[in-house]
Structure formats: C-alpha cells, structure tokens
Image (tube, rainbow, N blue to C red; front, side, top):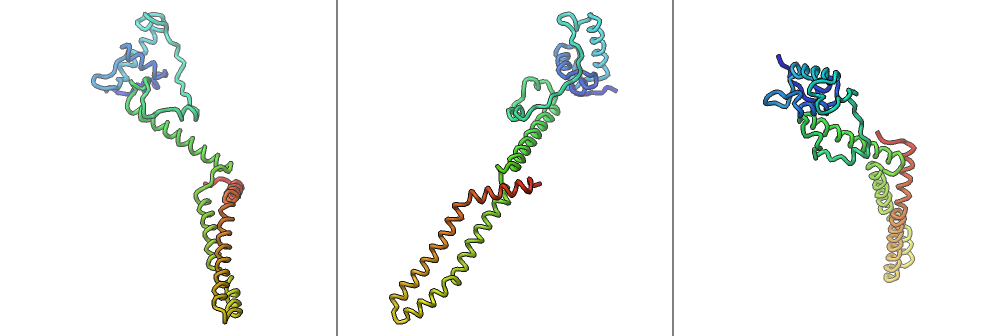
Amino acid sequence: MSELITQAEFARRVGVDRSQVTLAVKSGRIKKAKGTNLIDFDTESKKWESNRSDSLAGTGTANITRKSVPNIGRKRSVPSVTEVETLDIDKPSYDDMDDDDDDSTLTAQKVRKLKADAERVELKLAQEKGDLISKDDVLNVYFTFLVAIKNSITAAPDRIVGEIQAALTAFRDEPDMLNTRVYEILKAEHNAILDEVKVRLSTAKEEAEKIAKAQMKKGPRK
C-alpha cells in the first residue's frame, strides 16, 4: 500500500534539505500524488535515487541544464532574539508558498514560543537589575502608605484631647476665646496630617528604590 507523506518528511527520509525536494517537485523529477499535496514515498523515492545516481554519474535529466548539488545534509539555524522580534508570523514568506499547512502552522507556533521566551527572559533580567518592581511590591507600598495615614488620622483625637481640655479650663468663661483656641488646635492637627502625607509622597522614589534593593537581595520571584 502506498504511503503518502509531506515534502518535509520526504526530505528527512532521503537525507536532504526540504528546498531540494521542493525544487525536484517543481522540475517534475518527482511528483505529488494526484489530488493531494503529498508524495507517494515508495514510488517517488525510487525516482529520487535513480536521479541521484544519474547525477553522480554525470548523466540523466538532472545534469542536462545544471551541475549536481552535493548532498550536505539538513541544516537548521536557531534565530536570534533580534531576528525573532522582526519576524511577521502572520505574513507568509515566499519560501513557504509550497509548504504544507501543518508545516506553516508549526513554524508560526515555534516563532510565537521564541518571542514569548525572549519576553520572559527580558522581564527576568529587568527584575534582577532592579529596573522592574513586581505588582505585589507596589501594592505593599500603597498599603503601607494608606495604613500610616489612617493611623495618623484615627490617633488625632488622642493627640489633641489634652490641649482641648486645657482650653476648656482656661477659657471657661470666654466662649469666643475658647472657640478660637479649639479652631487653632484642630487646624494645627489638620496641617500636621497633611504634612505627613506630603513627606510620604515626596519620598515615593526613595521608597521604590528601597524595595528594588530588597528585591535584588531576595532574588527574582518564581
């Protein structure tokens, strides 16, 4: 029974680069099975061997118009990160025009994986150098900031109760003076809380750098 295989698989079995098989199909040296994009291995491999024998001997149709190409085996190069970034995986290249759909899909998947791996490596390096702060660390900074402000506000009554009691005693018979003094006490406390907020906001950069240094000591998050 005939075994139908892809051009890539045919190239692998006969030990040549896929481009040589594609060229052989275009030139008619080997043919695809009727109505398919596949190759009958049993039949076409015999033709391939016959043509290759003619080529080595310097005879046959393979040598009429051009010299034989030495068999150097299959070579595959791994693209660099820069090359991967410039690839447009949604746009087919001319080299893929005659490839099978499954081969094109596999190539696109490999490119996507390489790009994802490159992004992960870039993020990991940035985190190790302290140029990137994790979301959890940022949330911790905000939480610490808000807790400090909340504590400062809720502690205000305890801080000013003594002053208000003293004002009540001192200005018991002078309501206007008492109102003025209570206003001054509340205004001073209000300003003190705002000053604390301003100080914490002005030191946000220092806080971020402190977290980055601590993260570098702990190492990147897993």
